[in-house]
Image (cartoon, rainbow, N blue to C red):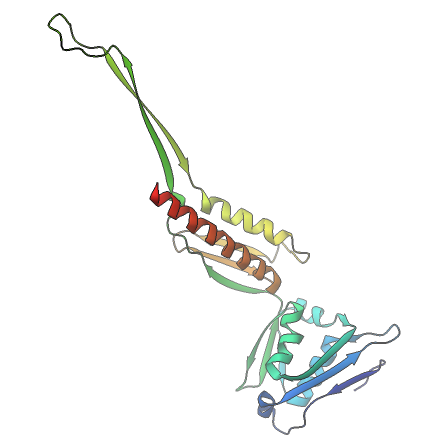
Length: 228
């Protein structure tokens, strides 16, 4: 390994790449002076040791792995645990094809998220009140009849969940420092109750947490409405 910084990187010894899945790994590294260790350096060594093929799905994934890291200490972790550290812990998606010994790494993914609401845009509440105006009717032979008018007042509250959902999710994505309007996209399919979103791993976690919390609150509201 050609590094200008003190570094110790220890991998288990094996001949065939398929054996890597059953091995444990220890990794200790640190940077000194002004030089820095990059994640891509570790990925490169792992690729050579395990005969892995690594494909970057987008430039952002490659650029993120080129970022420096200062201190790393992992002891006796599985290959999956090492992948989790290298990729998931640094806001990257990855998939590992054991049969082909191929790792795909990407910064963005497009996923479909089920939203557990049905016809919520049609949910509405009504409050009806009838008002009687005029003279009261009396049972008297001299009465010429009664003069009574009825007025009905209806107050309707329409729940516009679907109309606001996309707007709220877009605002949530914009709070992330890596937001990119040309890449981060959201589609809301009201009929199928599905949200399709293109985002980073960290952004998707924020969206899922938001929807989970919202879903819990809205289910409680529907139950209240049903009992009223």
